[in-house]
Amino acid sequence: MYICIGKRQYISKHNQYEISAMTLQQMEYIVAVYRWRHFAKAAEECGVTQPTLSLMIQKLEAELGVKIFERSSQQVVPTDMGKMIVEQAWRVISRARRIKEMVSEAQESLSGNFSIGILPTIAPYLLPRFFPQMTARYPDLNIHVVEMQTTALMRALERGEIDAAIAVSLDGMDKMVQTPLFYEQFFAYVSRSSNLFSAKSVKAADLNGQMLWMLDEGHCLRDQLVKFCSLKSADKSKNTYRLGSIETYMRMVEAGLGMTFIPELAVEQLTLQQRELVRPFAIPIPTRQVVMLTLPSFVRKNILKLLTDTIQQAVPERMLKFNNTEQRV
Image 1: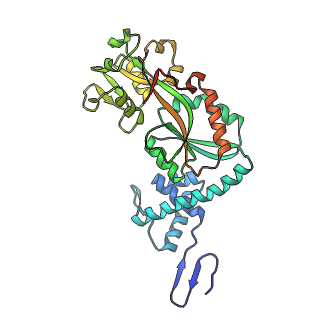
Image 2: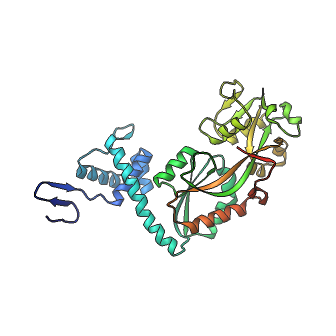
Image 3: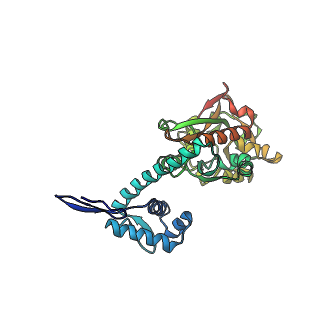
């Protein structure tokens, strides 16, 4: 029996077979194509030309003797075998990265690449508070931020696509490590034509019959508020609309239509004229806990502490504690 490096050939008395040497680079290429479903975008992410990426994947497919992707002019779709190969590649890449991360952590390094996923209902209000200052202070730390909904964040963490996620603490996150960041109240944002405009505060019962602008299904914020406000008929109500973002709904309210819900950090960004449309909720006040999610195997604790401390310093001090007038949603 003998072994040669490269294309490894194992020969025994009973059988003979070959195992192709799949490189980490090739694994990164197929994972990128799987994620983007597009060769040009995958090549851009990997920092190579499209012909180079395509050639390397074709070479791998030839060595393995299987098709990983079905290609057409419209789309790139993984084969059944391709899905299994990509899944294993994800795990190998994740473990290989962990070796480098362990070395960086031992050296207390605050440099290199770090990917963070963040909810779209948090990103526009939190990121401007700390991200520009942090990148200026730590130029050797390349932080990549991507917006995703909760389900996509959890999946990206498990697959090693991102290092950490800024999300809302929810049931079903037991497999993740949750590092508390802050607590954020919700406010009603009401149009001048609404009967709630004259109210000093808003109770859940006041929402019946209102024209509500709510996020589409799949947003945890929507699910939380529907549950808190007992909006059992929200899905069927003709007065409930589901279009896109909080900012879109705020513009609709400002134009004189209905009401919506906005998080506390959004209030901090409003002009004096916009603040005239803000109404607090009566006690108990709907409140969400914002956390940093990581896997139990996460090792870059120095960067995590840096991020956590920086974010907590960037939000009002009152938001760091949960008080008895609030109710978690």
